[in-house]
Picture (cartoon, helix red, strand yellow):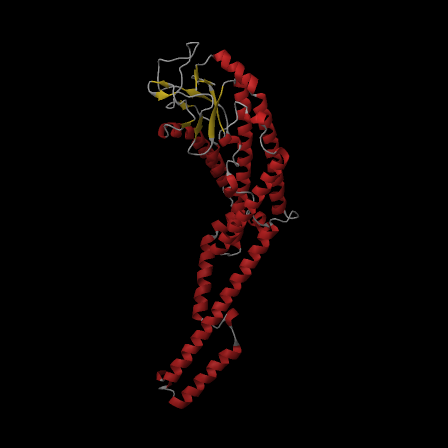
Length: 404
């Protein structure tokens, strides 16, 4: 069995990239291919820039959350620009720090004591994604386009997720839902996400099934790449949230700008309740009269000047304080319960297709599913159609061949 050896300038594509790149040989300067114009690549060689999708996914998530929470257009654009800059520098960072990332290198052929790369070699990126070589330019462009389309769907869904997450957070602030309630909503959303991903994978598997033998024989096929779960896996976020997210997101900027007044008013209310614990919502005339009656009885027994020093009076005051505290705690608990009920109701309405947020969730999820089916179909076709062009490109370029 012959192994085609990789020369410089062979095209590379990354499953997490947005464009194709070329193989850059820097490990040696003397051994070339049969045409004497391309250096043979080894395990220490590198690649160009693929424009990593992960920085863009994170940037889209942040931008979506900023939009929902009233962030300025300038801040959103700056976030996108920063994410784009990071995505363009990721490959350079990996190249600099991650030597020896190539797998399935030639076991017995060396150039300057370094194993050479072959057509079945691939680079496992520590950031995420798999880099594979392609000899034919047209096939490389098609494969890069498939990976780019897949990345674009994930970036859009990340923006949707950020928008819904930002709206949900804003609604929790507006409803005075504590961190525990907010975290509970996120946990439930994670469960929904896992279920949606599993359903999407089930639909894809039902439509396409396992790779055929012809697809597995393709020069582009990699078991670790095409027979693996989705790049982002079941932990990736989906769009989610509640009906209130759509309404309160637009008002989040006002909430933020008025935070000082809100905090001051809350402090004043708390102080007033401490000064007059039986006032307002905690007023209970019957029990208030009960303690007044007890105080009058104690005063009659011990006298106006001495009754406050009696143990009976201290016991009565302790009982009164405990009673007032219990009323306050009941009120706080009641309010928290109502807030949580309101937040939960809104959250579940977010999955009702008749609501704005629910419709947003289901439409985006359906579009994602359809897009993934189209992309998977394109990928299956390319696997089969790549064999002849790849063979012709290898013959045209001229590669070393050695017995395995």
